[in-house]
Length: 205
Image (tube, rainbow, N blue to C red; front, side, top):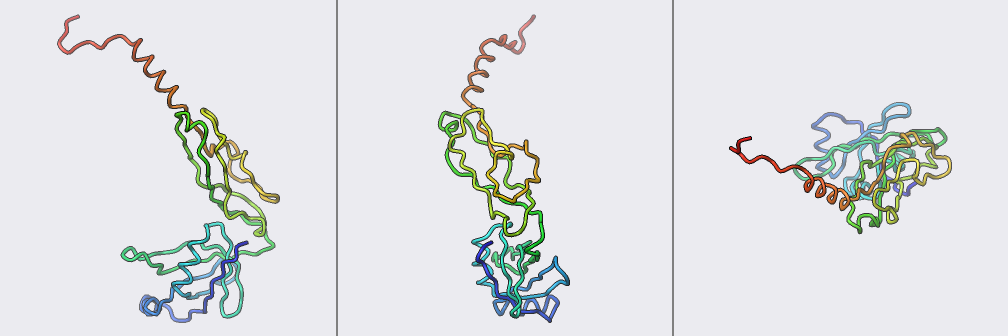
């Protein structure tokens, strides 16, 4: 669980004109859904933007609405394409004692041995799907690939997941691998040397 808390108030006026007035006041309209009836809210623009910078899509935050606390994910945000300011936010409320499924981002660190030897690093996956209680949900999975050698790989099954976290993504998916570029280049050169010369344009057979 994170310590990010957003303060919100119930929104009773709807429509584009009312939302425009809120935004001029430095407020952002939004909703909380997923548990019971949808709650229409508005939040302080600066507080919301600051909180979003420190969380991931799998971070559980608290949204206090008129004194009532709601545990939720930030499901989506909409931004103004001209100035980048948030103009709407959706929260998905969860139950803390109920198992949930969520996608958790992968954070790769380190410079692999194989890359220092001339290999090429590939990281085809950016997140995985897991199932657990909200209290056990990791905000992200940290993966140190410093020891990854040439032609070696890390799979989903190798990831360090905490106790109580069940993996949903396929275990054989590749998270990171190093291809040995030098070996491939040498093989290509060898093939080029042994290949028959190409016929010149206009040459008679």
